[in-house]
Length: 163
Image (tube, rainbow, N blue to C red):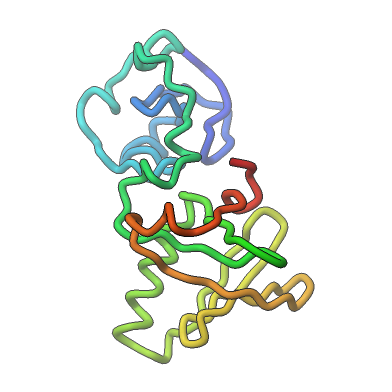
């Protein structure tokens, strides 16, 4: 039995090692990896042995989590850097941003989405395609691109993580 801190909820519980190598408690792992946003719930993931030895034999280092080209998403959300380039919103935010954008497209009154990125709180305004920092009132552009366009954009990092 592997007892440790769940990568998602932070509780000290029995952990399940998923195919992506993230370790989650049973409760968090029920729908798949909430860190990678890999929602496959095949029997190998959810019934894996509760030990570090059950990780994939390819010695995965979670690099897929930091590589937007490998994310199972059609569209990628970005925000502009201070001067040049774009930051990719972390994978853990992508589906929520996309879901809120789709809601906005069907109901224009839902044009704002508030989220926290670490200690930074921002509002994404889908009508103006701007990100407004609630910490310091900084205004940045946001954009939604098809994953196939990712190589044509200068990427500085992932929501504060270095590439």
